[in-house]
Amino acid sequence: MKARVLTSVAAVGALAVVACSQDLAKSPLAPTQAQFSVSASACSYPAMRTAAAAYLTDAGLVNELITAMSKAAGQANINAAGFNILTALAAAADAGAPTVKGTPADGSTFANAVLGCMVVTGYSAPIDFTGAFGAGIFEVRDGSGSSPVTSHLLDGGAPAFGAEPSTGNWPLAGKTLFYGTLLNLPTLGNDAAAGDNFELSTLPSGLTFSPEIKAGVCMLTDPNGRILHLHASDPGVILPPVSALSFCPTTSSTTTPNASLFAAAASRVGSWFTPSVAHAATSAFRVGGGGTGLIGNLSKIGPVSYTSTMAWVVKPGNTSRSKSPQFTPVVMVRNGSAGGNNIQGATITLIVSTNNGSFTITGNTAVTDANGVATFPNLKISKPGGYTMTAVSELGGSISTFFNIDGH
Image 1 (cartoon, rainbow, N blue to C red):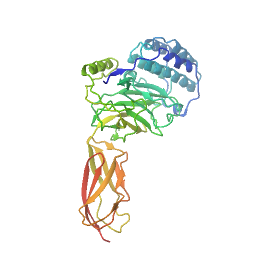
Image 2: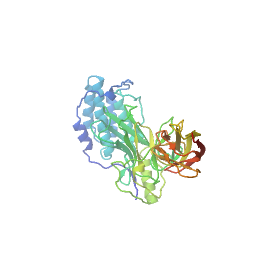
Image 3: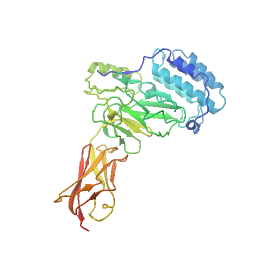
Image 4: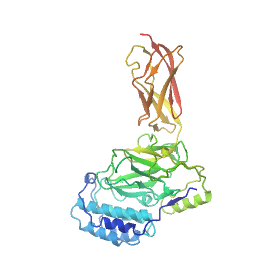
């Protein structure tokens, strides 16, 4: 049975452990933190203490961190102290009750109060972190560890969505705040959603991850679904599957949830944040690589069901047997979705027919890039004659055209 709930059970001392481990910590500003593009504004330490008291059951240890921040000399040390507070705040959000007594909106107010005294690229007060403190993600990470950033919302006991390094530690130059919100959209990039979709961001903003990080969900509603990475102004990229996220169950599962329990869990989640969750019961959920993909930057992310479509970018033109390369310009095929998104990592095979007798074809397989395009620079056919060439995607769909090869 699949239950969708918010993480609310953790050791009561979780906040104390984080606060004590970083109490009064000051460190040099890391490269990503040094990009001061926004001036600190509305900085009020009394307001920060008030916000802490509203959100936390016991704000004593955090108040010590606030004192340290108020006494820090120079913006670099103020930022370092601020990230210590945000780390403690994230631990509290993960712990839930009884460490937390306030609402996600109270958590958002507290986070903005801290950031209002910091100077971090991309921050312009206020940011609405309500969804991040509700079903979403609110975590601080740096390059010294590899712990994933995961949602407070659970699917069958595991985080519903999140991200983690694809290898080694996080590719980060300094302390970074990850915050994400469950979108709950029925479609993403005009393709049908096949599970939870979410938007993930960072402060400092505008980071590029190298190596790419792994992001996605633990459950799919379509066993053939794949992760779509959607930017606001560009076509989305349907990503090739990679191994499941470390925090997801390791075995495949299919279940039919009890509709009444499912609705009750969804109603509970909806009371925590805006917009409310309104998931309908669905017949099957699946754990697997189709729920994850590699991304180099952040935006909207989620699994989709899609129909594979094919189109010639450059058709094979009439050519000769002796020409080298035989096809100029190079043959190119686009594999996309019916929703208009690019499909990356799909193997495309060119098949030829209608010529009598034996012939060989080489260089006729390629894999699509982030633009959904497969390129065939070494395509060659040994025998002259007329041919029908068909481009076939491993994901379904094909397209054909006719051309001639002369004997010269």
